Image (cartoon, rainbow, N blue to C red):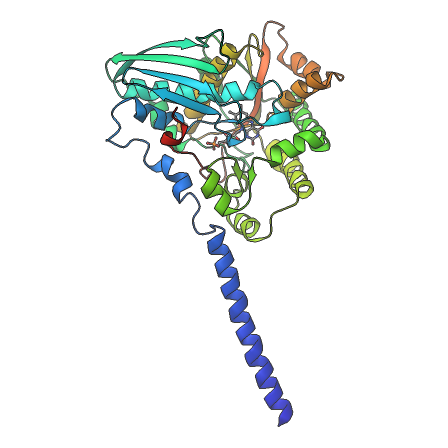
Length: 388
Ligand SMILES: Cc1cc2nc3c(=O)[nH]c(=O)nc-3n(C[C@H](O)[C@H](O)[C@H](O)COP(=O)(O)O)c2cc1C
C-alpha cells in the first residue's frame, strides 16, 4: 500500500517534471527563434525592399543592403540626395585578420553597388558611376549621379530577394551544363574573369586547397577569433545586431538547425571543428564544380569593386536558374594572411598556378551546384540605419 502510494507520488512527480521539461524546451525554442526562421525586425529588409513609398534614391539603398558581404558584415554607408548617392566603406565593420588588406570589404561594397544599379535600371533612373572618386579618401567607394531614364527591369533585379548563400549539400547527380557555366563566365564582363574547375582531377585539386586553407585558418588563433566575432548564436543578438553569420544561414537541415539553436552555443574550438568538417564533408564533397573569380589587380580597390559587382551578377543569374553558389574564400584569405605575416606564400602560389595566367589575380574562390535544400535568409540592417 505504502509502496503503491510512493510510486503514484513518484509517477505524478515525474509527469510534472516531464511537463516542466517540455515547457522549458518550448520556451527555449521560442526564445531562440526556432519557429521564426526569416522573421522579426532583422529580416524585414527582405520583405519590404520594394515598398511603393520609396520611389526615390532611398529605395535603391533598400536593394543595395540585400547584397552579399563578407561574414555578413555589411560594411557600407550611403549618403543620399535626390539626384546622387555616395557609397562609403564603414572601416569599423571589418573582419579583422580574415581580411587583412580589406579585399573582401571592397568586394562586398561592389556587391551592394550592383544591386543598387540594377534597382536604378528597373525603377527608371539613368545613372553615371564613378568608382573611388576621391583620391584623398579611400573609404569613398563610389559616386552615382541619377537623372530620369527609362525603366529596364531584368531577371537579375527580380532575383535580388531570392539570392542567398547556400551552405547545404549540392546534388552530386546533377551536373551544371557547359552552356550555363559559359553564360555565367560571360556575365563577369570584361573587368573580371571566371575560371571553372569541373573535371574530377582539377576539382579535387581546388577542393583539397580549400580544405587545407580551412585547416590553416582554424589553426590561426587571430583568424579564428576574428571569424567568431561575427558569429551570432543567440536569437536576441541576431535581432539586435542584424548582421553576421547565423545558425539559420549555416545549417540547412531543419532538425539539426533547431537542435543547434536550442543547445548552448558551441565553444570557438568546437565551432571551428564543425566548420572544418562541413567544409570537407559537405561544401567540398558535394560541389559540382568550383570557380575562381579574378581581376587584373586584386589589391586595387576599384578592381575589387568591379569584381564584387561581377560576383553579385553571377549569384543573381545563378539564382534565377535554380543554381546555388557559395564563396569558399579560405585560400585567398590565407594568401593575404601569409603576406601580412611575411610567411611562405603557399596558398598565394597555388592560386596563381590554378589561374594559370599572370595577367589576372584571384579575388574569390567558390563552389557551384544544384541545391538539395533551401537556404535561409540572413539578417540585415535597415536602409535607414546605414545612411550618413
Ligand atoms: C567577399 C565575400 C567573401 C565571402 N566569403 C565567404 C566564405 O568564405 N564562406 C562562406 O560561407 N560565405 C562567404 N561569403 C558569403 C557571405 O557570408 C554572405 O554573403 C553573407 O553572410 C550574407 O548572406 P547572403 O549572401 O545569404 O545574403 C562571402 C561573401 C562575400 C561578398
